[in-house]
Length: 238
Image (cartoon, rainbow, N blue to C red; front, side, top):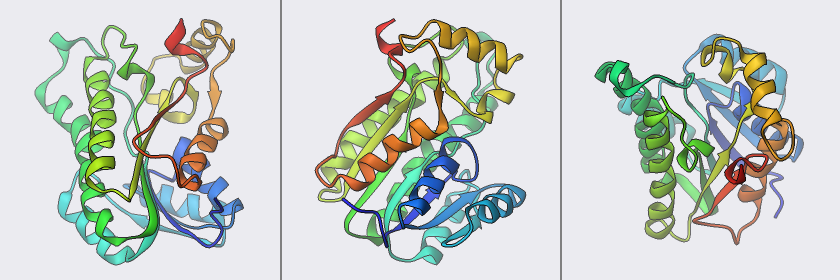
């Protein structure tokens, strides 16, 4: 159950939960490859992670770029997909097809294609871990698109766990986690986080480090597959 010496690719690993996963994986002795669509974020993340880590530029809305990325990476042990722009919280009537497709491209299609091109390169004992969210089971008004995508990711994970076995495929379902994701998603992030936390059983929102620990658990535990693991402060119960 050790990650020491394993090569882990984290798409979206330069900020938020993805970066926390990368940091904990490096601390566990893994070699980490982080990828992002921003060269500045790639450079900053690899500098903070230090050795052993490397960063690569990747636009997950470009299927050809995803294929080329995995060809360059070569064989590895685990894939973690946390990529995604700010959440689109908007009534259905005001959501344009262009906006919807842009979010879908990165959050679902990018994950799908990453699994497609990563699977043949995963070593024995390898795994794929996707990211969904509590909106998959507790949607709010204005979150139809995100709820649909996160629910789709969870169904995709179960199907791929069957199809790609013995490669393990799992999903982490975070609730509200304090990261920079909210900076572009809600008008007043701090007020939102305080309000959301007060309604949870834990009376606070989660941290990126707490969420990252869930990812490392499913990476390291070779008997976990086809599972959606909620890290939500009890959000599903309130």
